[in-house]
Image (tube, rainbow over all chains, first blue to last red):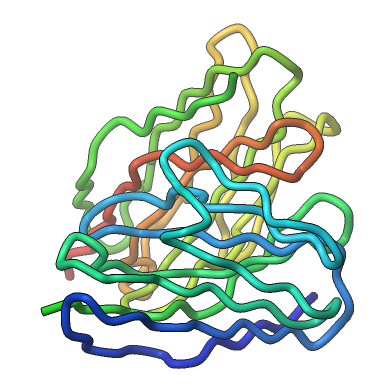
Length: 113
Length: 113
C-alpha cells in the first residue's frame, strides 16, 4: 500500500497569513485528494488533484482560498490562504491505490490564532 | 448522490463485550462502502471494504461488517472489544469510481476495563 507523509505535522499561525502543506507519496499515483477535518467533525473533501491539470474543487471550496499544486505523480501541496480561526482543522491528503482504496496521510494539524 | 449516516457519535462498551457501530448509506448507484479507524493524533487506517463481492466482509483487528441492501446498512462489529480498539470510526461510501469518498460523522468508541 502507498505510504504518505505530510509536512508540517502541525503548525500555529496568525490570522491573515498563509500556510503550504506538503504531501509526499512513496509511489506514483494518478489521483491525490485533500480533505479537511474540522474539530470534532468528519472529513470533507476539498479538492481532487491530478498531475498535469487544474485541481477540481468541491462545492464550498475555491482555488483562491485553497490553491493546490500537483507538479508530479508523487507530490502535491495545499495552501491555506489568508487564514482565519475558522480554518483551524486537520488537513489530510490521500491517494487512490489498488484501484479501489484510499490511503491517508497522517494529517497536518493547523491552529489559527 | 451518496451519503452516510452513523448513528451514535459515542459508543461505550466493556472490554470483552460485543462492539456494534452503525452505518446507513444512501446511494444512487451500487455503493462501495468502507470503514476507517482513526487513533488519536493519527491519520485514517482502512479497516475493511465492500466492493460488491461477498456481503460479509472481514477486516483487520477482528472487525467485520455485513452489507445489507434491503436495510441500506453496513454495520461494523467485533465479537470482543479490546482496550486498543478505543478510537474513532468512520464509515464512508464512494461514488463507484472510487474517486470521491463521502464520510459519516464518525463514532468514538470507548472501551471500559
